[in-house]
Length: 445
Ligand code: NDP
Image (cartoon, rainbow, N blue to C red):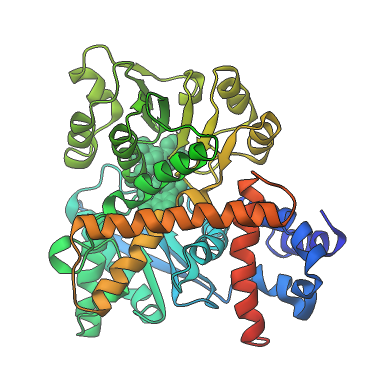
């Protein structure tokens, strides 16, 4: 790391003690910026680097709610409004017991550059709570969402901050939060949240967008080598929104996804995942992966190890951060894996990324490969603002075009800064320069 960026990193570690995921995300970006600053030293002027690693605003709040037995629980809510140079803060809400300030900050920081890559005029933010929706009734989830929104509502708005879903937050939760926001404001601001239901301002393709985009990115990387996904064996982790639609798009492109997972274990289905059954189990019944295996002859559930122990051509980590370490990376490489496209945010540890890059395989970081979700959220905002609704083909064509543009921007930036084929450098450099140019134009704010 160059001296100038090293100093900024040390400050981040000193100022944000114990927030290891945030340190990791900042380190990855700053490390890529060496060649950018060397070529364009003005990006280090005006404390621009120091400003970009400091959130514009951090909100932390109490979320009290009552369960079905009448017991009161207190969770913690967060919204990190990280950077508004390019537009209103935009980024999802995560409900998971592991959520803390460091996790939300890492996600918000990544979001700045991801959103810049989409070229759609959206700033970076992220939020959530340490609430665990697993095993909670609809009524409990509703009461939690209403309490969470009661505080969040005063900080967000269609031109200020536009949250969406993430782990543990899907259409049901967005619905409860939108209902409460509307009641508090007495205003039908459709553009205040994305990931809405189709009957009340949602966009076709938003549900599918992150998973589809991750696979489209893999396809674009393969095309640079004259190859495609056709006939390839695909390993997917996770069994949520991103994983399910990554599997769907991979199947559409002629590949065979053979795995998925949740926190209870992973499933190997060598015949190819039965997508309708997986959707029934996960989306309709909110069940566990074992429920799939019970109804699918030939599929097996593995409760030790990880999905990365299975040999395959393409890996799509779609569960959570740091789910793929260097041992897993080396196992994947030995199993013949030649492509990794990250559907989750920061799922590969730095050591795993290093192993992939050393081996010279195609590796796409989440901030580029999973940007299809937020890109389609911005398309939802566009439809809300125009009081219009596009059909599926129109929205999907826009998503496909945006993913191709992101891919090409990463390739061009990697070449410009002397590391052709390095999608990590390409994504960070292209995202950073877009935000940095606008921060300079806006002065010291
Ligand atoms: P979901 O809640 O729909 O699904 C998450 C899946 O990952 C579940 O199968 C869950 O299993 C599993 N998982 C989560 N945490 C863990 C953990 N600690 N250990 C093992 N398994 C875990 O979330 P999404 O699919 O929306 O999000 C997945 C990833 O994609 C996240 O990293 C998210 O930030 C990222 N992402 C999502 C976008 C979106 O549009 N939804 C956009 C861009 C990125 P279980 O149910 O057992 O916990």
